[in-house]
Amino acid sequence: MKERHNIRVKLWVAVGALFMLMSLASVGYAQTVSLTEAEKYWLTYMREEEKLARDVYLSLYDKWQSRVFKNISVSEQTHMDAIKNLLDKYGIADPAEGNAAGVFTNPDLQALYDELIEIGGVSLVDALEVGVEIEETDIADLNAGIASTKRKDIITVYSNLLGGSLNHLDAFKSNLARQ
Image (cartoon, rainbow, N blue to C red):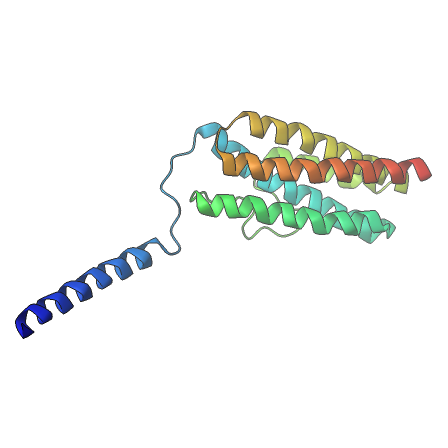
């Protein structure tokens, strides 16, 4: 009887150790799901596009002290974080990692940032028009990202960001109308 009990204890210890090893092995590792090239492209592109929006808005806030830029820059950080969570989940390198404000891995986004900062520095009206342009571009790109995937988690994140961008667009247009 005691020998049988010892065998059961050893079995439960072995099973418990196996479960512990399995849980430890999965902590911190990306999901082993293959994304399409289009899905990877849009995730990395959207991460930097959201960074572009945040960085431009912070710069324009510093220049014009218009609260709309400060408020929406906070929201853009949330958008960046949502995309970063997906990058981490799928084991995709973060193109924004380690880049200071106004610095981008994607050369097209770098050129766009530089152009938008120049235009937005002319007047508050120009700065608000830059906000409209960024949000309209973001909306089009989020729709393209949604069309590129069937993954519910990615669609959910993009759809949530789309709602935020529509609100941002309305805020910029309202502020523009008051000028």
